[in-house]
Image 1 (cartoon, rainbow, N blue to C red):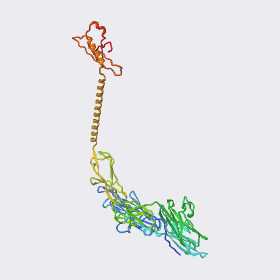
Image 2: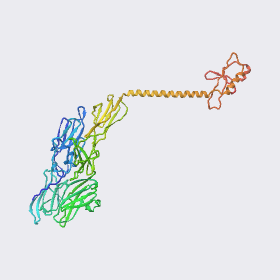
Image 3: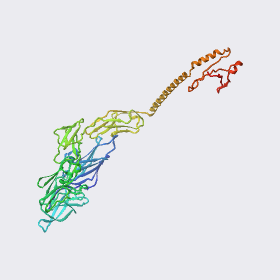
Image 4: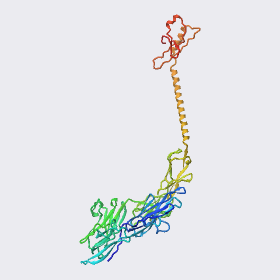
Length: 597
């Protein structure tokens, strides 16, 4: 008797030949061209791309990259904006390469996937063709009864693990009998009793086994998990459910966490101190058990399994269960390339409760509860969404950009100058530079002149643009001057400063000289003494007598004065009172009195 049950496994690549398509410097290369994956697993599709560096004297810059399916309507739709992929699609792009990751694969995901990039050129978009073909299928167990056993509730049967995508090269398999892992080949023969169930998986991807099937009869022991993967937000609650069947009435039932490094032994969660007051085990109906975990923590991310035990049989603990991923909220708004459409994207999409709330400038938009918002988008407004009470960051058009000049004022020819453009926007804006309304080649946030010439003088401004709008900055003037003019200006200034300092110095020195002459003036008693001497000595009609006063250094107590005159013939009676004539170094004869004044 043969039974077929679809289940989960990981990705199996069939072909690794690249898709290369392009012309005139444009192209996309994807590898592999065909992918076979199993339902419930994840898949990654890789593509690289290239384009001309310049067209019509303008730098070519990539402004948008996205994936779409060939089965969609004529206008490509970003997979992130497609409701059937919400919460299951991620892009990892950079260095002219882009990887598409799809998680929790469904059979409806089977399609041809194409990559597209859009540049700043009017006709600068390119789509990779023919694309990558993805087939999603299930692993299944096929059983064939070969003969009867010596017991009535037993049969000798052959079981085989099959997929619709033959793996290349041929892998080895893992089998689970009554929840216990046993390594075997792709198929094997054994005796199976009415309590026995069997499941298989590809080695290396044991977490994605097929659903257990009964080989002899229909009342074997088995467990089927409702979800293989569940994602939930930190602080929220989650329900993990399974259906089970026991050939005999179960005595005990429990949930536990799969063995981990910090948790080597399986412990009933109701008795685990890590989950005290945070877990409940519900059984809404016979044959169905639900584990409810409240106030989720990041450390709760693990694989949760169910087990039961009867008097004569037991469901083993090695059969893979439900993997729970607890994350911080990550709600994003994604701009669709088809027009004014916003999509609310979440890293965790809780099945069965896709309820979204949209906001404009922080105010709720009533009536908008779907993940896609198709209302009119005004560039002056901001938009955001919420899922499970977790809010996204708002998206809005760029604010008026600010331009900063590295060297304000006059710029010397040949110097290094840079202009920086900045604007507040979400998503981040793309920048463009203009000189007196002429578009420049630079598309970066910074415009750099490594050695600026005179011809670059002028007014500059920048624009910031994203999917929601475009704004322009104020104009900034760059005035480039020759270095020799600046040198002459600097020299003139220095000379003028020297002249001013010299004039001040001379004025101070002159004032000091006048002060010293005033301090060296004759004392009144000296003038009286000189006058008396003149009356005492008879005048000579033929010879004039000349007097001078000499001022010595002020650090002496009193000034010393003496009468000085040219040598005159005197009477013999006066010769005893006259000092000797002494010449000085300049050849001038002085006659000193022999007495101090």
